[in-house]
Image (cartoon, rainbow, N blue to C red; front, side):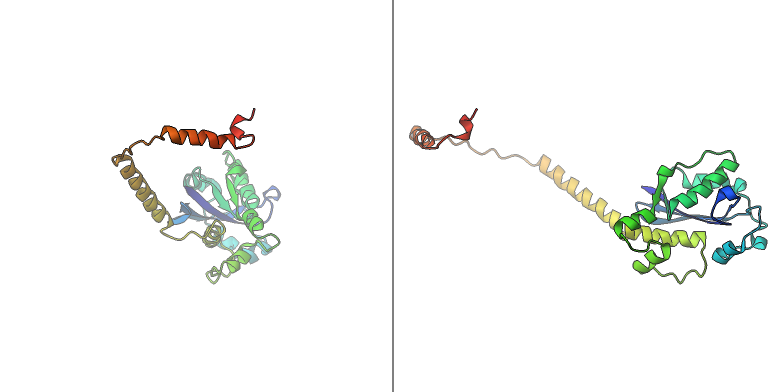
Length: 228
């Protein structure tokens, strides 16, 4: 089972107001384990960076000026995510921006049914508790020292760790153990199918035993086997 953990950084909160994606980070999972494959790109938003957005991720106009535009990387991005489910924290936000960028390039949007929203999972699992990425990292004792500002790739790695905890905290080797156990079960079942069968001799009651049994049954009041 292939999944992609995805995060973006943007110039603001709403693509309808002209805000754009400035960073995409994605991490590949296979059977709930990181494969080491990742996708990361900074993007030129073709507009100025608002101060409040800069304060969150620290990506300046000068830094982004020479980067690719989304249209330049759209095919590579779509190739990387393929048709895998997308694990996203607050999925509606990121998909809204990704689909706005895809629309600008004349490409089809990503269906929101592909999204696995970790905010919703966390709220179902821990009702009433904070469900921010930072709060979940603290709950699961995931080290946040790797970042001082938000970054799409860093946050994707943190979210991957959170997601694995939310779905059961699988450890490396789990799937190998499961496959080994399955193989052992199938080997045992095959040995059982091939084993020679022993036929036990039949046993029959004597006529005196049958008569005694019939007399015993007469003593039972309204037996269920005679019910209509």
